[in-house]
Image 1 (cartoon, rainbow, N blue to C red):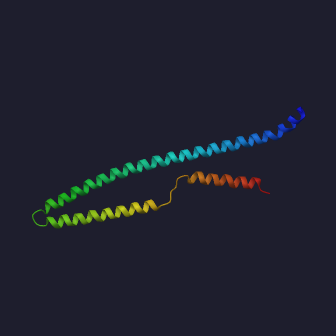
Image 2 (cartoon, rainbow, N blue to C red):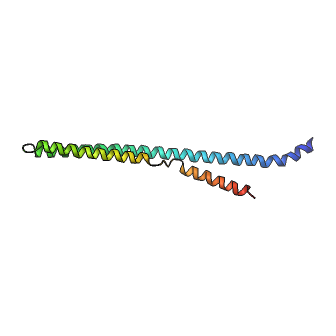
Image 3 (spheres, helix red, strand yellow):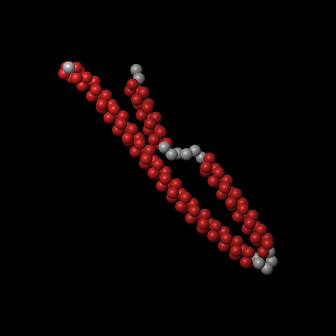
Length: 131
């Protein structure tokens, strides 16, 4: 019975090493996924913060410009000034909505590095196990 265990020892040792290697590879890939998620979360939070700040500042600037033009033309063409300002702001809002729509349609890049690494791993395993 002792001889049987000694014969099985060499067969199970490589399998254990293979299992440990696969487990380590899986852990590394999972860590890469987690890093990519954190990076994407930070990027989106920063993007949203700066987009809100920019939108507020542009909005305040446009309101002040409309007020300035309206006050300057109050006695002669106040309705024309307000109408043109309305058209200008409406056009800018339409342009902004079209840009948002374009950005939403762009493909996501989340997990691209991880997917590429997994494909590379699969190709390497196919080369090593192939004839």
